[in-house]
Length: 212
Image (cartoon, rainbow, N blue to C red):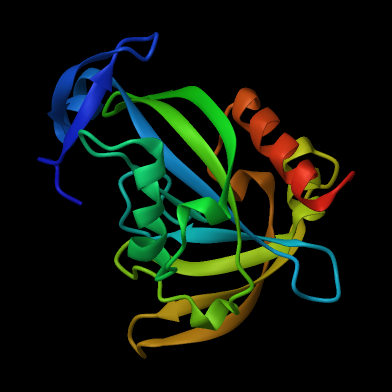
């Protein structure tokens, strides 16, 4: 991840107004595009599962939080469809665009004294039955992977339950190996999204698994 990467930048109506570096985009709060892909698995005997990544403790924002299965910025000249490359880069998953289901887009802002992050986020759903241990994830960015049922995840975010036990794998850097773990997760352990974002995502998840 280079601070000199070029992004297309937009006005608040998502009309292109130029390009600038990652550093300047986040310094000045220019609107830019991101790709979010939520990976689901309904290959088992139980309810469909959803995958979350554990952000590396060295990340600039929300270190150690559970996050979207796969996410990344779109570079200058890229379209939302080009974001499929993030699956390979972050998780070692080779996917075809036609296998992803486009759910919609949402404009979100995250502003602090150090960062002005204004994103137009394109949301996708992708079905993958790969066991957690078989994901080849980017260990400089991701510390582990966790799963719970789609219903548990939605209930947790909606406040229907206070905590959910997730199964996962953690990367142990000193031993250079993956370890199976269980973790009790609250909504505060998950990177926050806007209510509009969850509205789009939950509608897509409901379509995926049926009426929840």
